[in-house]
Length: 252
Length: 319
Image (cartoon, rainbow over all chains, first blue to last red):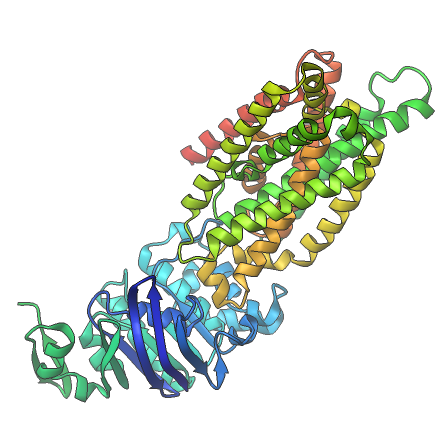
């Protein structure tokens, strides 16, 4: 379980995240939604120790993320941000094998290689595994990074907008994959998503943020209502139930 | 791993080339007694190898932590600081005073000041909310200019005789290397190398960027500080031995990336060191035997190296 208590983040006088207290349950997919500038990515960065916390604590399985050694945490929790640029020339396999670094510190064992193969297979990257990252399309590169964090084999996997750069087919494929990882491997996956319909269809739990605070949280059925959408996005959104799923229609 | 074989081949070929150049340097044009020539040239070779090593390793590590392949430590004002230290010393206590100081103690102080400067600069720039590389470079350039102007100012108002002494210290060549200083430098480089070697696995991860390396469990701030301190020591060593050599590191590092064909620092670092030895010893050989000391080593290296570098860039662009 991820326990967030009274977390605040401010840059000078600007408060980005204010007094967020939240418990993210073990197993399953939790999506964080909300308008731009709501503090979603900042919250995710603080949970994953990428950004310092101004006040409050975050505990992952009882480990305080600011006090636990980084290499211990790297075996429990992994994070993938949206913009990943690499200056060195790496192949997909090289990148995925970096996911084993917390365990092997650069000396790969046979088991590490097997894990890397598994992650490459899981993402369907076998044919691309010897290609260099700079020769891939944005979506392929995104999948390679996802393979890396899955290869890290942590209980908690955090993604900041994993659907960026992906077309419809690959976006659906990615969400199905994450669902599968949560269901079959027992992972706890936390996502920042912009497309609320994906959040509605694939999450077990949705956290809605606005102006640096959590305004609503609960199962998709509770969040996917016109009333909640108005509160979160300040927008009139029609919610329809289509084939048992709540879909919002906000395009016009 | 499948990409290892060509790299190991490359390292062996380069090692053979480097040995060849060193043997040539030791023997070509030798007239007279070998028991004089060998120790005399051996000292030169040792200092060149130390400098080559220091420049190659410091440039590659600096480029790794700054995620940029056209930066060198001199951008951060490292060698300008060295010039400033030398100038202030002569300015404050005079050349007689400086000569009276133990060179080993002086060297230790210089390294300490440079390490303190780099870690301070890093702490100040990276502990805040902004972690902009451009800011770091800009501040480095501004500091470099400040240090150079301060040195220039002091150089203009000191006694002309003192200035000659100072100039001699700043443009020390491989022909006037102090034996004591060489021993201290070798010791410093050895200690740094042990640390560099022990951290070998971290550099590849650091090259992935701050966020990815934190995700993989690397204490990014601490590691970058350590690497910058190592870089500061290496730059001090090379600058203290021969004076500032700026373009050389950039050239060797980029040639090494091109030749290595892999990202692994355990290949790139040895290749860069061997290339640096070949360039430096080869350049000095050409300087001594072809141009009969009529020109400066940096001119030879930068002319030949620049052409190779351009050729590589053009080849890379057309690929």
